[in-house]
Image (cartoon, rainbow, N blue to C red; front, side, top):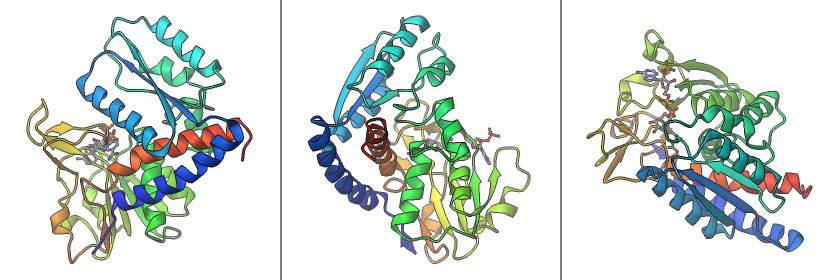
Length: 300
Ligand code: NDP
């Protein structure tokens, strides 16, 4: 079985990014600049933000971290975002989710300018993506597409099943596969007889957030399995039940939605967890930031 190694793909893409960033720096006179906003003191979010800042450093991108108190009002958060939108020296903005209780995500997703929306979660960014006018996409599904591209996995004409329909993974994943000319079915928690679909598929992307719930018997022989799920022991909600929403966090033991060890001798190719989709998510965030910067400054 071919192991689709996200670390290898990530390293290759970061090397290419470094070159693009050097070019950007020589024509603009500064590196691209990502601002990450953290509201409150959520411990996991602190780790995620640190990893994003470190990733920027690793490719020569500038990052600024803005820490805001959890008692912040919605108006103050909105005002911060508007100020960042209007600052010409900022190329990408990311607000770490979830927000503390009392603050709503919806205004954030409405307010972040699509020209600077590094996560590509905002309603306008998703609209552009759906309309086919976007050069960025939510990081995790776009990272999956980069893995498939790196390993030259043919997509056009193939039958793909996406398990999960969240706005940040499942739905954009299905859209990206459709745009790559796959025929796509989206499954979710109310799908009757999930296996009927997964067993037919040439490519299955599993993003259900259910620890190790699919194995060899759920897939067609020779298929390609992408496991987006990320679960860890050693987290506060107990072994095997905690869902890690951000790939930067690696706990004592991390596993996915798929029983990877059962796939050897059955699947054609599969992503491991850890080391599959996870490393690609932050790399795609960096790529999105640079692409937005190049577009906003008319460099490409
Ligand atoms: P959500 O909880 O937002 O969505 C999960 C989706 O899976 C829902 O659409 C849900 O259906 C569906 N689902 C749940 N249980 C089942 C089931 N038994 N059978 C079929 N479908 C089911 O999760 P996210 O999309 O945010 O994340 C999914 C997983 O990916 C998580 O494990 C998360 O930690 C991981 N993740 C990993 C990233 C990475 O970089 N590796 C980045 C982001 C997420 P319904 O809509 O009906 O509720």
